[in-house]
Image (cartoon, rainbow, N blue to C red; front, side):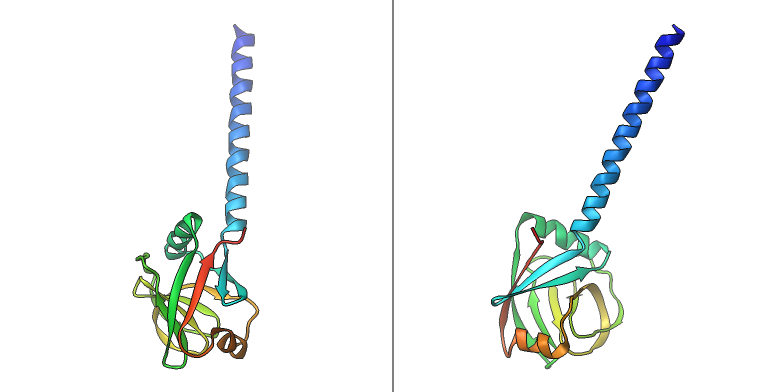
Length: 152
């Protein structure tokens, strides 16, 4: 009887250790794969590093299903703005934007800034390795279509 109890305890310990290791690996993979987003603008693909909030979580959930294409227009010579086609949770805070900031405006519009602005916004992320001048050139004058996706 004593041997049976010891054997059962050992098996339960092995199962517990095995399960906790799998969860840890899944969390690590999730963290590493979901903090980057691709932004295709014309023939250029830029990467953006995303922040950690419920807005980004909801955006990534949609991007896991399919890429999102957004028609954007210029506003006030400082940003490109377009409707996401969905509403995301808001995490608004007072922000002064910089070139490359990706912002959620009023829960349903995506904004890419190439010049500063201060307002209550939800920060989604920042485009990597691009200056204000480069970004303005890539975005061009007038309307532009972008596609958001998760890197493969």
